Image (cartoon, rainbow, N blue to C red):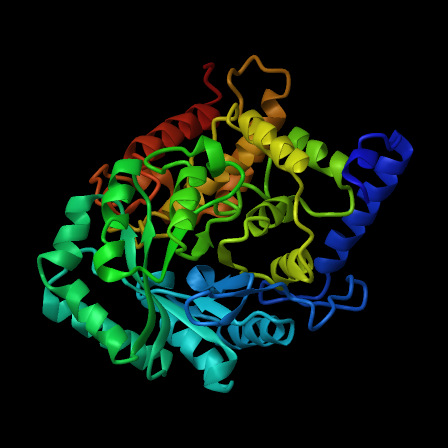
Length: 456
């Protein structure tokens, strides 16, 4: 449908199309098993062989524009321990590969250290030339040469591969951090040598930080020749990045100038661009009623030609299904649609959500808190209008009940905010630069006021 035509549809047609979109969601929610949603005949058919592919100009690799981020593999609790639901992971990988996805990104620290092995098990069932593996050197706390080399070798072993297609220096944010972890200890020289030997095919880095720090790390391109870079990019971060992050427009442009292919992380900001406030959802649906809210961000990123792959952590099969629809094939956005998204991003900044992307780098908490669960529940209530500014608000009773009941369901009692000691160990791991103890304390104080029914 033409973009301008959607502005002129009447209310009856809009509601009719909104209803069609709701049917897709309802269909996706049928047949639940162990938290994984199965695809059925009710869902829209995804064409095979239509995945948008991008060519790596350095290697000729044909890479799927939709990449599978393995940071959020589904988990189960067994004997009091968290473990990955391997059967479900295998099913998700099978469906993704059948529909053209061939890029899988993981790291030693994902899913509390369990992701690489689970990813390796799932992919080992396929010929090695049918997929590309991306993983990282996450030497955050112990960056000795010996430990860093051991981490690289462990990744090869857990992934059950002889080489890694795309290897990253994980989460660079300051030049001192970069120097300590990779320059002063000789680790970068070691990785460059591994690339020469073919055990690494492409060497790059992921980034959260200021423009100055980005420029200094990028300057190593003349010496090292970066094969790619992974940046946080979406229509919200394009011109309105929060925290320590730099506007993606600057990062992307600087990489494009040098011919360095771009990988994208957090296309949905940990789900915040798919779970938006109701009036933002209505705004997006009014323009394209037949597409999901999430598809706007994927299509925005895919509309930039130097993007090699867009990583999405798809936990449930309906997430995978919807994302595949955005890329099979890709329908790029025009300039008018991009401007519409920039305006949408500015409207979203008026809502006081905490910039948590559910990356879980802060986990496990020494004192057992479910930090992402607490922050995400708070954000959910903000988006749904269930965060009262005053006990005199008209919908105070409804919002109070929704927050407290939802909180008890979302976060186990012994992992809630009142157990935080304020130790601050989580802060150094947060790529979004959130003062986590401060936010947890603020949420806990708000919860106590709700429980006691005190005015505020």
